[in-house]
Image (tube, rainbow, N blue to C red; front, side, top):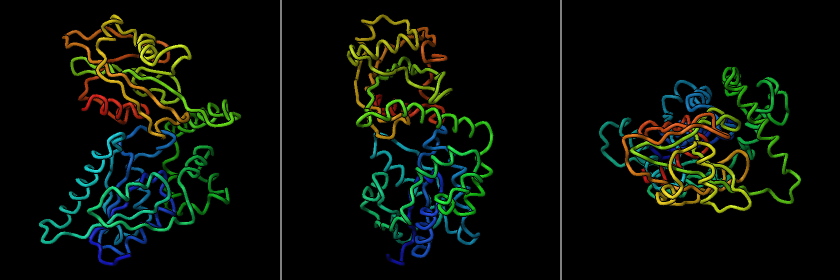
Length: 351
């Protein structure tokens, strides 16, 4: 690896920050003046895949380095932009350029920037998305993956109990374990553990299947006068989060009819069916492999654009929905929205 980088960029979710991540940063610091760490999946609700907030993950990272090292480390949040790689790449470029400009003030020469990471799986494909920067691939440290660490933490009563497992104790640094001890407490973490247990039980219902099932669902994106129709989920997974009205497709119905049925059941939307059918502007498949913790779930979203009106149609929560509500598009908060529904709204409407 070259020793002449001005900046090396490391992108990850760090859920949690483990010795493999630590090894990449330590290697990077040996070959660059400044290290930029972009903390992905920022501003998401807490889920079993993303249990820790971006602020908590930043604390985990910084706890592992000295004051002098931390002066060379720049950490910034990075939002996912699912279903739009170009927008995500632009976001990375703008974030990195902003940090570089802030560090140099007036840039007299083009800084040498590189990406660093280990090509462990499809989640590291970003190493090929930035041809303007060099790419440095580091060997995966002892084959460590965050997934089994995360699942074990969510399955045990405390970090102390987690560390008693010989197979897990060496995967986290003492500093990270100490931070996790202070974070993994309270009602929020207990709810995550309960959701993790619920998902485990849900998946057991098909564990004897000859192959993992692929579920087919529908979601309705209903827009009127700058508002989108959403529901508050009343059951796990995602209890209390806002979601698009939708659900599983029955055996004897079309995708469109399934979407119309779910709209009726979950929102009691007071719009005649012929009007709804005539308001469909788009139909798109959303199939990110990680979009649902329950299992491989492909959803078909229908975009309904209702005619502008000063009076929004009356709605009322029903079936799986605790409440139905019209949300102003300007007030959509990804931290309060279930699964990838925020990104579905953005993608299908072109917002």
